[in-house]
Every structure is written in C-alpha cells, then in structure tokens.
Length: 369
Image (tube, rainbow, N blue to C red; front, side):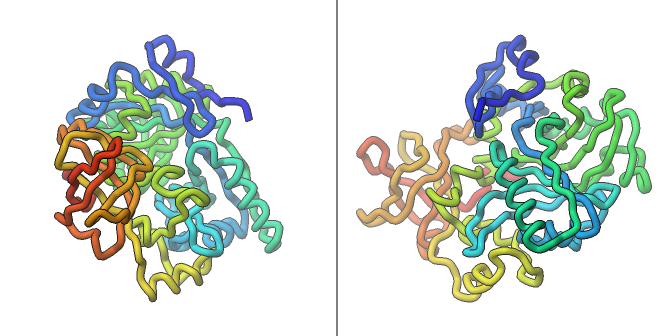
C-alpha cells in the first residue's frame, strides 16, 4: 500500500516539520522539538494533527447490535454524544485494536481505529454483518476526515474561543463548549466549519479532539494559536500517562494480550455478547499471570521496546515502551511482568546494552492527571 499523507501535509512541511512513517502514514514527528512540544502540552496547550486515525461510520436498524458484537464494552449504554473507549477482540479474547466509539446525534456510530487499521476494521465489520444478516451500513470515511487534538491546561479555553456555536446534543443543555463533559462529543461550528468536538485525548491532560471535513482542515487548524506538536511528543506524553500504544504495547501476533492483561479490563462488560466474551469470562474467573505496569529506572539509561526485564537474574518480562520522561527528567518504561512482581517498589532490572540497570515497579500513570 502506498504511503498516505494527512490533508495538511504541505502546511506542516512549510512550518518545518520533520516527518516519520507511522501506520502507513507520513506524519509530523516534531515541529520544533519533542521537549518543547511536550512542555507546551503539560503547561499550556498544543495541537496535534492525528488525521492518520481511521474513521468508520456504522448506521442502520442493526447498527447498535453490530457495534455491540464486535467491541467489548456496553454499547447499548451510550446515548447521543457519548464517547466510549473499548477493545476489538478475537474469539480468544486477544486485542486486535483499541478504539474510541462516538454515538452521533442521529443515532449512528463513528468509531476510530488506530492508524493503518481502518481497512482491516471495515472488513471485520462487513464480514460479521453479512455473516449474521444484520441490517447496517459500514462506510470507511478515513479519507474524508481530518482530526486534530488540542490538549493541555489551556485547551478548553482555546477551544471556547474558536467555537462559534454549539449544536446537538450539547446545545440542549448549554451554549458553552466548556460544559462538554469528559468522554462526550457534540456537533459544533469551529471558525465557521461544521465539526464534531469530543472531550477526549491521549496525553493525560484535559482537551478535545476535533473532526472536520478534509476540505476545511486548514481553517480549523489555523483557529488554534498554540504550539503545533508531532507524534514524538504525543508518544512521550502518553507514556507518562501510562496509555497503551496499539501495535507496540500489544499486538495480535507479536505480543498477544487480553484487555485484562493490558490493564484495561474496565473496557470489558461481560453482561453483553461480543466476540471473545467467553474467553474473557474464563480469564476473569481464573485470573491473569502477567499484567501491564510501569518501571522507573534507578540508573542511567533509557529502556526501549523489546528490552529484557529481569528479577533475581531470571528474565521475567519485556519492555514494550520506554523514554526519558521530559516532565520527570528520569527514564520510565512500560511493559508486562508476572502479576506477583507487579507491586509498587518491587526491584527489577532492565537489560540495556548487555548491562542490568536497576528499576522499580511504578504503577502508571507516572504523573498526576
């Protein structure tokens, strides 16, 4: 498949962004520096182009049933404007992807697969619909949408300044975007452009994610006078917050994990019927042998994906993500450990260039949220 580019690739190029391939997309990795962009989000606000995320629309009489059968959370509990974090699992309960679902004011659904997963998700939905004769339409609209994330302590104030008017469903209660509750979304006009604005994010800070038509992308982007940020700082921010990265902290083949093992068991509602439910019910009953947790290194060195974690000289786990935390100014890591070792303060070691470096188990998030 040819590399895809976001609608504002040229705008970012003119701004001096450096680019990287991520999920088959050529995306900005940094505009100024990862450290400066990271600090802006923690201290004020930054805007990210996340148009590499997928968008799949599901509508029709059986849309709710289709969404419920293919995701682990309780879709029936969603009202218009609700946003829900959930997992897509196979029959064995293994995470194929994690995703955000939005229930639109018209009753339909828009869900957001991770970068490069949109076609796979579309096929999964279409195949299940056809196999079970469900009356629903499934449209991959990834190429039609631009998506931006405005994150940080000042993000809601900046969004309030950029929003011209509030539409359904928030308009029934308020004309202020600041009144949008977390994990809800509303239609709104931003700089004259019709958008979907959700109070969600991936940084550990308050903020919004905004979806608009690709033809209006530059207008919406320009409405926010704050630090442009790339995927580099997005990664360090989400690691400090202890958030999973699909394909790195879990992978269907290379690192198969269930939601319980990955620390997101809250996305599983066993009172609903979905693909993988029986396997997850059995694991919920028996318990897990390994769990996702964090590490704070006590010695110099940065842990990276794939590095061994040892305890008493034996390999007990593997780092899935690691960085030098810009906020804490110390190295942090995420990974999987035997459940009995995943207690705060447990001393382990990370093997870095052949040397064992002391580390302490630290339940994420690493920062106050």
